[in-house]
Image (tube, rainbow, N blue to C red; front, side):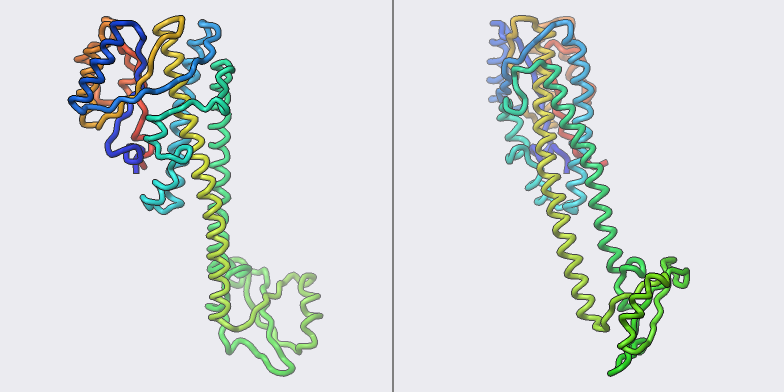
Length: 360
């Protein structure tokens, strides 16, 4: 399931930033009226708080750092989501239940965005805010890798308990009732010898019949003689049921822990990503429109089939901001969002990649 389905079927999301001069404000109102009439897109206010500009000369390097961090964060979102899908066995309903941002669906979080000042203090420099996000995303990426390895290790270990090596596997398929001698005075122990006498390379199982009074002494000498005594009671159904039950309980516990972690950290990295987008909009707005900071940011939600028409409308309405920028005709012909966002347009535009969760 791609992010576009979680955000809304075949959805494109665009963050645009525009200066607050009179001509542009008039064009914005015209845009809103056009969108209401044509239903080409839905427009939402995207609120970005007043952030510390700092030294203007440093904003270019900050902008470059934010661009690289954006790419990293997209990658971590995709990895986390793909892992969630695999663990949840591609069940769409369960994926939607867990792929949330701060407890709400991704579209609601994005279109009703509110800056988290507790997590990302607006009193900090822009570079410090970028560092916070970078550390958070990098930590999630590293922990995801280790948790996936640990979870897979548990799965393999649990599977081996049922059909693994002779050290751990269920012996019902190997041992038959006629292999065991049990009487008032005699009993049979199962011994694992670490020699290549069995096809799995782990060792061989031998039955040793002895007097019951000698069992304790036999077990005591087992370690010195380099063989293991397997505890075993011939009750195939009970034994199998017990192991299956233990297997199920353990697997369920590990499953629940991992799903909870994935849900929590998918939310964390998605929230960080949208804050990162807000940071990029702010920095580019200062670089493009200058000081004092005076701009407005909108998020436009459009059906992918209508995105071309939307881009034509935006290019036409805001070409006055910079007539030398990409003209509306060229702008409209750009069908690849990832390329469009790197074009120099007359207005600031960042595409929120709704295809990043597609499984490739």
